[in-house]
Image 1 (cartoon, rainbow, N blue to C red):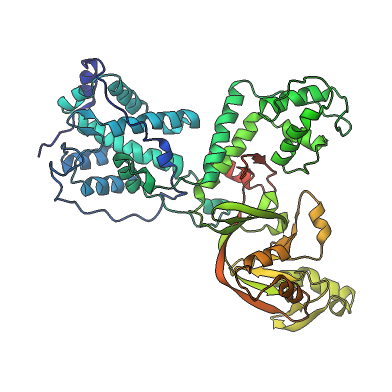
Image 2: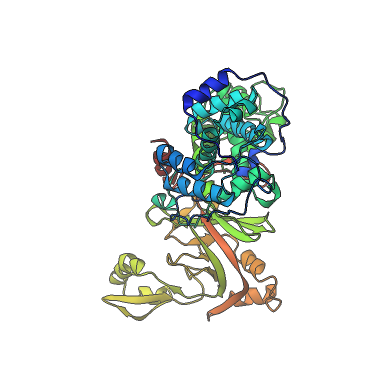
Length: 550
């Protein structure tokens, strides 16, 4: 078993200058960086155990017949790798292969290494983040790819390049897919999936691409839009649309329409040839698509709110997309069926068999009572519920109301059931006017957040719907109850309606609990491929941008 010693950099550089011209080497075009779009992940976990050395591997059964010495690895780690996590990854990786090389064989740079490197460079260019660029290694590998990589192996330098390549792989995966910010620092409490970087490297080297799932479709969709918006930026972005003093509909004539058509054309919404100042019929679809992008009513009427959203510079939209891509790296592997409430979108989505089924409007916590970002499992449907009023509301709202009017509790169908210290324990009985409406949906959690009906239906007519004390109000609670109980045959639609209109509370346990994700995305691509941008209602984008961009 031949061991290859480390050669100093000057030997590597000297070898490169003497390389012969390129020999044709077949490149695996099927190895792409999509392999790396694997999991929302967290590299920054507890220090992992190190895989024991597998001494059964030798030249006859190794991935490559070229080996390095363990002392070479340790010397390299001491001098070049500051991260304990990456040190342990590299020890485990080479122990598991008894120190056979990963990127070089007896013929030089392997085809798998070349395939990864080309895809890696393409991804790096699209991301346009210099933080993942190792100038010396890039220059060295690019030189090997345009010359005879066998020369470097023959000059005993491949151990140094081999280990540097492996280190860069782990750094690259952590940088691009591991996320840059600890979610807990920005009030994100959804557990994230760990990044299995060593298994990922094994997959890249073996070509077993089918064993890995993409990071998530949401990430891929938004990332593709990011690349498109970067191209728009490179072309100079878009001009500002003058704000008209009136709303505009089909047939109206206004100078701002000229710039509107140019703006919608630059973002790919409008493909018409009419460049006049008239709101023509062929512009309606583009306007409605733009309204959908920004969360406005899709009626084709041009209002100042739409123009203001369209006038946000492309650079700002790119920044918004980067913030949300960071969040998407934090998401765990999503199940086949789940509910997702996106706070700044004011929408609940039902996902079945990994496909969007339906959605409904929601009301979320106001700025002073922010809805928490977390996940859990919905287990109970509660018909005609009591509202057990939180002590903070009792203290700040109920007691002052009682002092103003002694009949407040009776008039609002409330009762005192006991005392907690000096505060009464108050609940509102089922029936008309109950703040939770006719049904609530419980996914037990320490934040005491749940979905529920509401008697205040008028709030759903508003575009911005942050009015609650933290829980999430549903526009169509009957629809959700019917969906959740669809496989429990005793719960017909008639029985559900009846249970929602009783004076006694009724709890129903779901046969199969449903995962619930309460998220915060201000930019995403929907199931029809439409890009969305909405307001940062809690300033979470602003906080995360401070961590990402300084």
